[in-house]
Amino acid sequence: MMQIINEEKAQVFSIDLMLGLIIITVILGISADSMNLASDKINENTYIASMGRLVDDAADVLVETPGVPPNWEESSNYSDITPGLAKYNTINKKVEPNILSIKKIKQLQDRYDELVYGKILPETFHSTLIIFPQNSKILPLIIHEDDAKNSSSDIYVINRTILTDFIDSKIVINLDIINSGNNDEIKCFYDKCPHKDLNGSFKHDPPEKGQHSFWICKHFKLSRKELDSNNFYIFSDPYTNSLEWIIDRNELISNKSSNMDSKPINVSDQLHYLIGDDESAVLWLHVKILDNKYPFIVYLVSIPKEVPVEMIDAENLKPIPCYFILKAWI
Image (cartoon, rainbow, N blue to C red; front, side, top):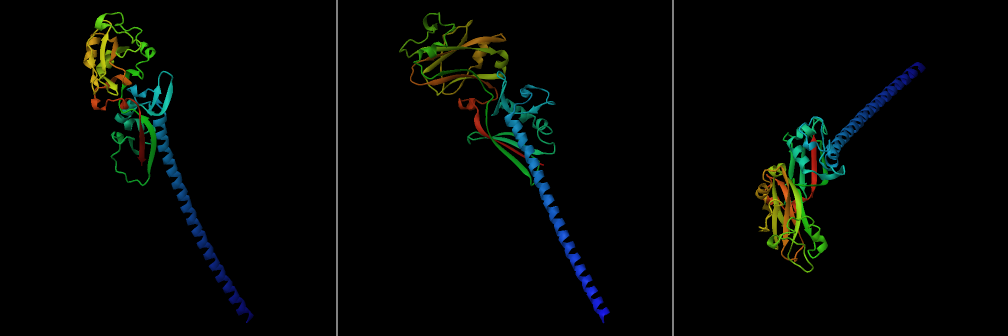
């Protein structure tokens, strides 16, 4: 009888042990699956963070650095170039982060794949880069728009606020006359005016006290190379019909003045005539103030020939606020 009882106890113990082992096995299996899921989630988050950093770093390179070398946009060999779009002051050797150069933008636009992939973004990436002006009246500047189908669920978007020019312009002269009654301000333009010792209508004297009609004059140097590749315009901001102007040179002094127009005036043909066969020349801009009713700025600007005259105004001569949008995916 005791033997039977002992055998039954042994069977019960074996069954309990087996059930316990099964439960432990199930718990270990569930724990292993949970650890695998957690590990996969960690790896996924690490991957997303890593890819996001790559795109963020690429945006930093473009908007905060001028690139290597800093004047890379003037190069014809792009093999050893790292692109950057920030302006670089060649005089003081200082970078202007978040203020982008339209020349660099145009070069990046023309050779985007060569300059971006394998340099600031991995070659396996696709990307789109667009600059949106905060002024909705100005069309966006599309630097690159990838036409590859985007089937990836991981899209990395970087949005930066920057300033950039929309016209590759050069201000040759700006006569900023805030108070035309300030004789000291006006006289600073008269040191070497070729008209100052002439007589009659050719003579350009500084204003006398209380005088409302007078000339302001300033010289500039012009090269044939710049003249051949750009158009030159003169305009006032704001527009006023109280101005007349002359452009001449010491060897070809003129007293034939023209009126300011409400639109920028293309003076390229006149400059071609004045420079003649010379490779460069010193020319003069003379502006006659007919009254001192309005403060104004007179601009003489150099603009690439492909830029339409409708885009030429004082606002477009300075950097404007924009959104820099870089989107990338694999």
